Image (tube, rainbow, N blue to C red; front, side, top):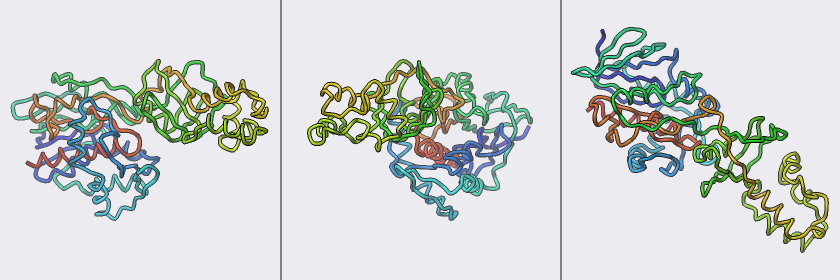
Length: 385
């Protein structure tokens, strides 16, 4: 039985950041994988979208926004970029304030470099049982038993099961009587009933809305439904049986455009007007049922209004989503009312939860990794006290 001051379960973004901030204690990081930062490695297409310049609490979903605001006020994008600058890691901005490294491996190596000699790893190790003891916790694993005074759970959510993700944190919460919200897939492709896969492979920039929540970005037509950034974003808000609305010409008042062209150049057809604005395959689909080659001055205003409605407010009823295997993150997690501002469980002293296993879910664009880093940094610094 080996003793440590702190044991961190999970060698992802939150766990590694946490370990790097602990300087005055012996630390063991346990992970079931054979390598650290496995999810970080593939994030952002292998380039790791590690934060966002326009970070705001509005970019997150949580049942406790007050707690979330507190976290974001303590750890900002510059906290991460200054760390990258320390290691001369190059990074750049893509669209919408998203900051990417040249390669995810730079981020992982940076986190490794931040770890002191006080930190050890136990990889390819399965945690089998956790028991509260008088002076801390006893952890039974496939590689032996360990004791610690303080235990940090950084095991993430249930998305990316092929990378070892699970609902471990929620099972532990249940064991200790800690309230939580069940995990559900988020940032996930959507499926629709009676889907026509004739547009498979078509990608196009649109605006996708659910109620008053809208995202302008690409959508991708697939054999099962819709994917692409705009759809992944809206998936965190919409439920089965609810409708999303797609505007294929965001920023354009299509009804006004058609009425003006009908008056000024009525010989033009719908096909002539829109064929340069979107893929022809998509246009054929949207104009099915309309005489797209007829001049506008031969079409009634009512028909043109129907065309405008279809192009600007194309409604689809959500049948479901592609589940945890294709979800980037999860909704739900440990109830934030159960932990204090240092991420320690109020009713179980010495037990901490950080990262994606908490009830904090970010939008696409670097927000989830930022939250994991923020949790890890705040918790790790507190463990020095």
